[in-house]
Length: 307
Image: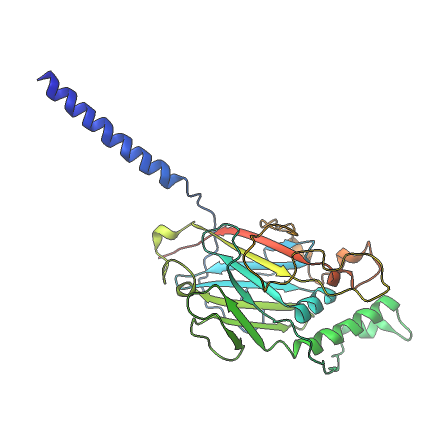
């Protein structure tokens, strides 16, 4: 009798230990907050479907950004009002890395725009309120900014293609108006306040473990990294800041480290602080200085879910 009771207790203890280990292993997955996309997002290079100001801001990279999801898609957007950063992105490209495990691997990426050396056709700049304040002669820095905005609008005309890497079945280069086999959609444009807006819709079926999220996926970590590549500093200019980051996104996986901006979702977008994007130039009179720095902005967040 005693032997039977002892065997039963031993069995129960073993079962409890196994369940406890399983529960402990499951609890190691840290659940993170995410943003559920309840309304439809139109990918058109506009911020009308996103919160204003954007909830996250990297002061060093001079970009704001936001990420959300529904059951089928991950939505990503980035904006910058700094014209030098805009020109850097349009000429040298932007790489957006996605890590489905929430780690720092750089294997899956959207490269858009793709770096280009095409001759830019100068586009007439639309008059705005700042033009009226310019006056005759005007401020030298303001003139430089206006000329830079003209270059940005000209470069925007060349942002016609994107490439994919590390996805399940669509790792090629595509015109932005052509639907790839994964269903990924990207757009970039400049709005009426001279903000450069980047948007993407990325179906989970193209990179995630499953094609549609379910309740158990709520809070599971996922990572996004925005990477910019420095423009070459013109000969004769000092500063030595050119290409001081991670370089082009077109390379093998090396991890999210190195050259990282403030990242980690340290939001500074409250009150529209980053709109216009020029506050960071107060310590340097050269408005082109942000263009000569490579940056990485890393964001780790959780997947959202609603029935």
